Length: 362
Image (cartoon, rainbow, N blue to C red; front, side, top):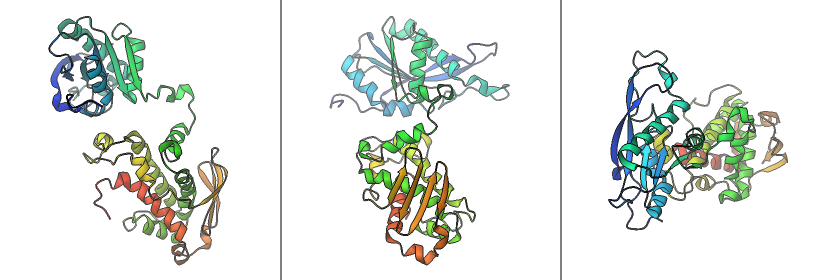
């Protein structure tokens, strides 16, 4: 969408500046730190800036947002805007020298970060941008910062673009306890470009995996199906639940990185490094789960439902397995259940989209 004349979004296209930032805007603590700024003026064409897009950095090195906030580059190209990204304090290379400073983490707050951005914009107005209107931009936590920045410092910016900003997800707003899980789960159905069977299979898998972990035969079967290292599943009744939680845990990261093109955005931000996830990773997670493999009955929305796969049955009641018949089966009998095996292999494949992002582990 940027066109051949527009550079690919990259921190390599930036001019880097370091701003001498105050450590404590509200108290008496002395000290400053170096705050990094990335500036791209290629859309201004040598003239004075008449519009500014200012990214309020969040919880990673600022290069992550320079390289992955395509909206900034697209809007900048369309509007002839100056682009500026500011790194969040205590992130990347904008970390104060706090050795020996009492309560050093007390300066890493939303309030201090917002004040940083207000001070930076004020300094830029004196030296670079003059009276040009500034729009704050952010995503996720950065989106929350962008919204709050416009509210707290309305004189600094004329507006804010707050992408995927979970402002109402804070405890005092009384969000649904499983609100994030519900939103992520939508990706595994037709809303995310998958067959609805994928979502149903995953709903079925969690109580089944949890129930299998309660018996020695079930744990051995899970270890085989998920290709786990010897002994890593544990030898207690909670083994299945831990495994289910481990698999579920990567889906949040896959949802964050569910771009229509390969991207290293999340893998480089939280690990394991610069390994690109495939395009539409949550669709790839469903590759082995798009055919119906289980019977689910009851109220899935209230997490009160029963599951049957081959001969295995389990009933989920919110965060526990109320009943199951797994204890009735030997390891050999479990191995002889083709649909159960297919379900677990499909779940393993979904897990591997993240955990085996390099494709090197077999």
